Image (tube, rainbow, N blue to C red; front, side):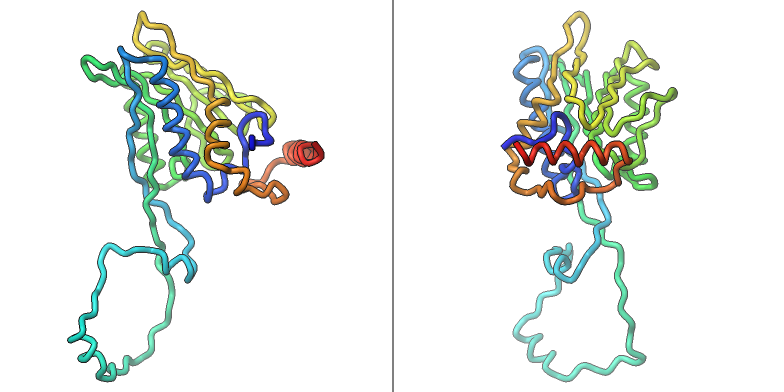
Amino acid sequence: MPSPFPGMDLYIEDPEIWSDFHGDLAAQIRAVLNQQIQPRYVARLTPRVAYEVVEVTRATARGVRPDVGIWRSQIAEKTLSTPAPVVTPAPVQSRVPLELPTRLYTVEIYTTDPLELVTAIEILAPVNKRRGHDAHRDYLRKRQELFRSSVHLVEIDLLRGGERSPLQESVPPAPYYVMLSRADYRPTVDVWPIQLQDRLPVLPIPLLEPDPDASFDLGAAVAEVYERGGYANLIDYTDQPPPPPLDEKSAHWLEDHLRSYRQN
Protein backbone atom coordinates (compact mmCIF):
# COMPACT_ATOMS: atom_id res chain seq x y z
CA MET A 1 0.00 0.00 0.00
CA PRO A 2 1.44 3.42 -0.93
CA SER A 3 1.89 6.31 1.48
CA PRO A 4 -0.98 8.81 1.67
CA PHE A 5 1.47 11.68 1.17
CA PRO A 6 2.52 13.08 -2.21
CA GLY A 7 6.09 13.58 -1.04
CA MET A 8 7.80 12.83 2.26
CA ASP A 9 5.67 10.99 4.82
CA LEU A 10 6.32 12.75 8.12
CA TYR A 11 5.20 9.65 10.07
CA ILE A 12 8.37 7.91 8.86
CA GLU A 13 10.26 10.25 11.19
CA ASP A 14 9.14 8.08 14.12
CA PRO A 15 12.37 6.64 15.65
CA GLU A 16 10.89 3.12 15.44
CA ILE A 17 10.74 3.44 11.64
CA TRP A 18 13.47 5.92 10.75
CA SER A 19 16.50 3.66 11.24
CA ASP A 20 15.07 1.02 8.90
CA PHE A 21 14.04 3.69 6.39
CA HIS A 22 17.47 5.34 6.44
CA GLY A 23 19.33 2.15 5.58
CA ASP A 24 16.90 1.04 2.88
CA LEU A 25 16.83 4.48 1.24
CA ALA A 26 20.63 4.46 1.03
CA ALA A 27 20.51 1.02 -0.58
CA GLN A 28 17.83 2.20 -3.04
CA ILE A 29 19.93 5.22 -4.03
CA ARG A 30 22.91 2.97 -4.68
CA ALA A 31 20.86 0.51 -6.75
CA VAL A 32 19.19 3.18 -8.91
CA LEU A 33 22.44 5.05 -9.59
CA ASN A 34 24.39 1.91 -10.45
CA GLN A 35 21.89 1.22 -13.23
CA GLN A 36 22.95 4.53 -14.82
CA ILE A 37 26.60 5.18 -14.07
CA GLN A 38 28.38 1.89 -14.72
CA PRO A 39 30.93 0.91 -15.95
CA ARG A 40 32.89 4.17 -15.56
CA TYR A 41 31.54 4.75 -12.03
CA VAL A 42 30.21 2.68 -9.18
CA ALA A 43 28.02 3.69 -6.21
CA ARG A 44 28.89 2.12 -2.87
CA LEU A 45 27.51 2.18 0.67
CA THR A 46 29.88 3.43 3.36
CA PRO A 47 28.62 2.54 6.86
CA ARG A 48 29.51 4.26 10.08
CA VAL A 49 28.30 3.82 13.63
CA ALA A 50 26.97 6.55 15.90
CA TYR A 51 25.87 6.08 19.50
CA GLU A 52 22.51 7.38 20.64
CA VAL A 53 21.20 7.73 24.16
CA VAL A 54 17.97 5.76 24.58
CA GLU A 55 15.33 5.86 27.29
CA VAL A 56 15.53 2.48 28.98
CA THR A 57 12.62 0.86 30.76
CA ARG A 58 12.86 -2.41 32.65
CA ALA A 59 11.47 -4.23 29.62
CA THR A 60 14.03 -2.63 27.33
CA ALA A 61 16.87 -3.36 29.71
CA ARG A 62 16.20 -7.09 29.49
CA GLY A 63 16.87 -6.90 25.76
CA VAL A 64 20.16 -5.01 26.05
CA ARG A 65 23.20 -7.18 25.50
CA PRO A 66 26.28 -6.11 27.48
CA ASP A 67 29.83 -6.32 26.19
CA VAL A 68 30.97 -8.24 29.29
CA GLY A 69 29.05 -10.97 31.11
CA ILE A 70 29.63 -12.82 34.35
CA TRP A 71 28.90 -16.54 34.07
CA ARG A 72 28.03 -18.65 37.10
CA SER A 73 29.46 -22.16 37.19
CA GLN A 74 28.19 -25.11 39.25
CA ILE A 75 31.06 -24.61 41.69
CA ALA A 76 30.19 -20.96 42.02
CA GLU A 77 26.56 -21.84 42.68
CA LYS A 78 27.57 -23.90 45.69
CA THR A 79 29.76 -21.09 46.93
CA LEU A 80 27.01 -18.52 46.42
CA SER A 81 24.59 -20.57 48.46
CA THR A 82 26.27 -19.03 51.50
CA PRO A 83 24.23 -16.01 52.62
CA ALA A 84 25.61 -12.76 51.20
CA PRO A 85 26.97 -10.21 53.64
CA VAL A 86 24.64 -7.36 54.49
CA VAL A 87 25.67 -4.07 52.86
CA THR A 88 25.22 -1.02 55.03
CA PRO A 89 24.02 1.53 54.50
CA ALA A 90 21.59 0.30 51.85
CA PRO A 91 22.21 1.92 48.42
CA VAL A 92 19.69 3.95 46.47
CA GLN A 93 18.99 3.15 42.83
CA SER A 94 19.28 5.41 39.81
CA ARG A 95 20.02 4.94 36.10
CA VAL A 96 22.92 5.79 33.83
CA PRO A 97 22.49 7.11 30.26
CA LEU A 98 22.61 4.11 27.93
CA GLU A 99 24.04 4.60 24.44
CA LEU A 100 23.16 2.07 21.77
CA PRO A 101 24.83 1.90 18.34
CA THR A 102 23.00 3.27 15.30
CA ARG A 103 24.30 2.36 11.86
CA LEU A 104 24.32 5.20 9.33
CA TYR A 105 25.12 5.06 5.62
CA THR A 106 26.63 7.40 3.05
CA VAL A 107 26.25 6.63 -0.66
CA GLU A 108 29.56 7.34 -2.38
CA ILE A 109 30.19 7.40 -6.12
CA TYR A 110 33.67 6.39 -7.27
CA THR A 111 35.43 6.15 -10.58
CA THR A 112 36.28 2.50 -11.20
CA ASP A 113 39.76 2.93 -12.68
CA PRO A 114 41.33 4.23 -10.56
CA LEU A 115 39.03 4.05 -7.53
CA GLU A 116 38.54 7.72 -6.61
CA LEU A 117 35.69 9.41 -4.77
CA VAL A 118 33.63 11.74 -6.98
CA THR A 119 30.33 12.40 -5.15
CA ALA A 120 29.09 11.83 -1.60
CA ILE A 121 25.35 11.54 -0.90
CA GLU A 122 24.49 12.10 2.75
CA ILE A 123 21.08 11.20 4.23
CA LEU A 124 20.94 13.07 7.52
CA ALA A 125 19.92 11.12 10.61
CA PRO A 126 18.60 12.48 13.93
CA VAL A 127 22.04 12.20 15.57
CA ASN A 128 23.57 14.28 12.75
CA LYS A 129 21.21 17.12 13.70
CA ARG A 130 21.43 16.93 17.48
CA ARG A 131 23.47 19.89 18.71
CA GLY A 132 26.24 18.80 21.04
CA HIS A 133 26.17 15.14 19.94
CA ASP A 134 29.43 13.61 18.72
CA ALA A 135 27.74 12.59 15.46
CA HIS A 136 26.63 16.19 14.86
CA ARG A 137 30.15 17.54 15.33
CA ASP A 138 31.63 14.71 13.25
CA TYR A 139 29.22 15.35 10.38
CA LEU A 140 29.88 19.10 10.31
CA ARG A 141 33.61 18.37 10.29
CA LYS A 142 33.20 15.88 7.44
CA ARG A 143 30.99 18.33 5.54
CA GLN A 144 33.63 21.03 5.80
CA GLU A 145 36.33 18.63 4.62
CA LEU A 146 34.21 17.79 1.55
CA PHE A 147 33.76 21.50 0.83
CA ARG A 148 37.55 21.88 0.79
CA SER A 149 37.95 18.95 -1.59
CA SER A 150 37.09 18.27 -5.23
CA VAL A 151 34.21 15.96 -4.21
CA HIS A 152 30.58 16.91 -4.94
CA LEU A 153 28.14 16.71 -2.03
CA VAL A 154 24.42 15.95 -2.06
CA GLU A 155 22.81 16.43 1.36
CA ILE A 156 19.31 15.00 1.89
CA ASP A 157 17.49 16.21 4.99
CA LEU A 158 14.13 14.48 5.40
CA LEU A 159 13.79 15.29 9.11
CA ARG A 160 11.84 18.28 10.41
CA GLY A 161 13.54 18.32 13.79
CA GLY A 162 17.05 19.10 14.89
CA GLU A 163 19.75 21.53 13.87
CA ARG A 164 19.84 22.48 10.20
CA SER A 165 23.16 22.26 8.38
CA PRO A 166 24.53 25.79 8.11
CA LEU A 167 24.19 27.93 5.00
CA GLN A 168 25.71 31.37 4.57
CA GLU A 169 22.48 32.85 3.21
CA SER A 170 18.93 32.09 4.27
CA VAL A 171 16.59 30.01 2.12
CA PRO A 172 12.78 29.76 2.22
CA PRO A 173 11.59 27.91 5.35
CA ALA A 174 10.50 24.32 4.78
CA PRO A 175 10.30 21.08 6.73
CA TYR A 176 12.66 19.27 4.35
CA TYR A 177 15.63 20.26 2.25
CA VAL A 178 18.02 18.87 -0.31
CA MET A 179 21.31 20.66 -0.97
CA LEU A 180 23.69 20.10 -3.88
CA SER A 181 27.21 21.45 -3.64
CA ARG A 182 29.13 21.06 -6.89
CA ALA A 183 32.87 21.17 -6.30
CA ASP A 184 33.48 23.61 -9.17
CA TYR A 185 30.68 26.03 -8.13
CA ARG A 186 31.51 26.50 -4.45
CA PRO A 187 30.62 28.43 -2.38
CA THR A 188 27.34 28.60 -4.36
CA VAL A 189 25.01 25.67 -3.70
CA ASP A 190 21.61 24.60 -5.01
CA VAL A 191 18.90 24.11 -2.38
CA TRP A 192 15.47 22.52 -2.76
CA PRO A 193 13.10 23.58 0.07
CA ILE A 194 10.35 20.93 0.23
CA GLN A 195 6.94 21.50 1.82
CA LEU A 196 4.75 18.75 3.28
CA GLN A 197 2.42 18.91 0.28
CA ASP A 198 5.24 18.95 -2.30
CA ARG A 199 6.44 16.04 -4.35
CA LEU A 200 10.07 15.18 -3.75
CA PRO A 201 12.38 16.42 -6.51
CA VAL A 202 14.24 14.63 -9.26
CA LEU A 203 17.86 15.40 -8.41
CA PRO A 204 20.90 15.86 -10.65
CA ILE A 205 23.83 13.81 -9.35
CA PRO A 206 27.10 15.31 -10.63
CA LEU A 207 29.91 13.19 -12.00
CA LEU A 208 33.23 14.18 -13.57
CA GLU A 209 33.45 16.45 -16.58
CA PRO A 210 32.59 15.94 -19.40
CA ASP A 211 30.13 13.27 -18.24
CA PRO A 212 26.53 14.49 -17.81
CA ASP A 213 24.80 14.36 -14.45
CA ALA A 214 23.05 11.19 -13.42
CA SER A 215 19.37 11.61 -12.53
CA PHE A 216 17.81 10.42 -9.29
CA ASP A 217 14.06 10.56 -8.56
CA LEU A 218 13.96 10.98 -4.79
CA GLY A 219 10.17 10.72 -4.65
CA ALA A 220 10.11 7.41 -6.52
CA ALA A 221 12.84 6.06 -4.23
CA VAL A 222 11.00 7.04 -1.04
CA ALA A 223 7.77 5.51 -2.38
CA GLU A 224 9.58 2.27 -3.21
CA VAL A 225 11.18 2.06 0.23
CA TYR A 226 7.82 2.79 1.90
CA GLU A 227 6.08 -0.10 0.16
CA ARG A 228 9.01 -2.49 0.49
CA GLY A 229 9.22 -1.76 4.21
CA GLY A 230 5.51 -2.38 4.81
CA TYR A 231 5.25 0.91 6.68
CA ALA A 232 1.53 1.19 6.00
CA ASN A 233 1.09 -1.70 8.46
CA LEU A 234 3.23 0.01 11.10
CA ILE A 235 1.83 3.55 11.00
CA ASP A 236 -1.44 4.64 12.56
CA TYR A 237 -2.43 7.78 10.69
CA THR A 238 -5.09 8.58 13.28
CA ASP A 239 -2.29 9.30 15.78
CA GLN A 240 -0.46 12.59 16.07
CA PRO A 241 2.69 12.73 13.92
CA PRO A 242 6.05 12.35 15.65
CA PRO A 243 7.70 15.50 17.03
CA PRO A 244 8.48 18.28 16.49
CA PRO A 245 4.95 19.75 16.56
CA LEU A 246 3.63 21.31 13.38
CA ASP A 247 2.81 24.97 13.03
CA GLU A 248 -0.87 25.85 12.82
CA LYS A 249 -1.03 26.06 9.02
CA SER A 250 0.74 22.72 8.53
CA ALA A 251 -1.39 21.05 11.20
CA HIS A 252 -4.58 22.15 9.42
CA TRP A 253 -3.23 20.90 6.09
CA LEU A 254 -2.33 17.53 7.64
CA GLU A 255 -5.76 17.14 9.24
CA ASP A 256 -7.57 17.97 5.99
CA HIS A 257 -5.29 15.77 3.92
CA LEU A 258 -5.65 12.70 6.12
CA ARG A 259 -9.42 13.19 6.40
CA SER A 260 -9.65 13.20 2.60
CA TYR A 261 -7.37 10.15 2.41
CA ARG A 262 -9.55 8.15 4.84
CA GLN A 263 -12.71 9.05 2.92
CA ASN A 264 -11.36 7.82 -0.41
